[in-house]
Image (tube, rainbow, N blue to C red; front, side):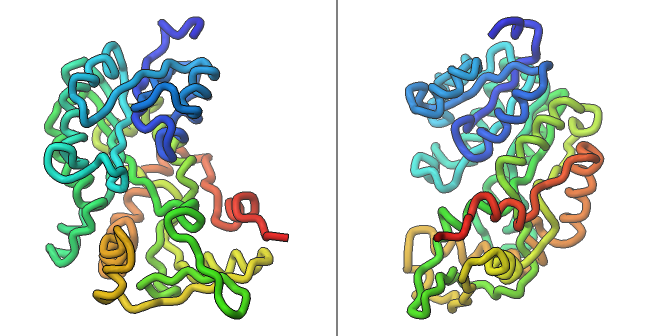
Length: 316
């Protein structure tokens, strides 16, 4: 890309995914940065689109440490995300924690100055061991490794419950009365859901790289909104012309066996209720949003109503 040699190179893992894609979008709007998009497949349609947009695309895999030095070489900053739901993220040497530790080591060896880790609250610690919720606690346990690595700057960003989940991982089922219902083991009235448009996480990450004096000493940054309930989200959709329901089902052994990941979902919902919110309670929620507001005082995250009107249109 012309003139990019004078820019700070930011490495973006998961650049073709939900989180990384948003990071690329918002970083691209800042002329101080050049993007190095990391993906396992440089031939995918999304990778090809990134190349067409003028971004450097590099093949690397957190399960293959030999691919990582080239990913971080000469970079100023790095945004790193792992996925519990990715079938390549399994226990042992390819667990999320192992993947993250490889990224931290390679980034430090390459001289990366600002490391941003996509984390989540330590559900296991918050519930005093009653609930693990591995896709939360495993990420949280990496936080200490980031701190110990000794980067000049480091930050933690907390993705919210994705609005997008309501049409992907959590599909509603048709009912006999013509409505569609989400059927999960959590009350529709529990105001514990910190939700947001995941693409807007990129705005927070881009601002964190641009303002290390505010973010670079371990800032913990929330994305989205303070807690609402699934019932409020259903009410919003129905006001827009839909016919949805939320049905609470028992969180029992039958539920846990319904599909791969059902136990993880149930424990996640139980953790939200026990802690008081997705972000680990009202005190943590307030602190994380305060840090984000200091970094992005004029940015307004989309409300669920704003997002749904465009992304969940009423079927004719």
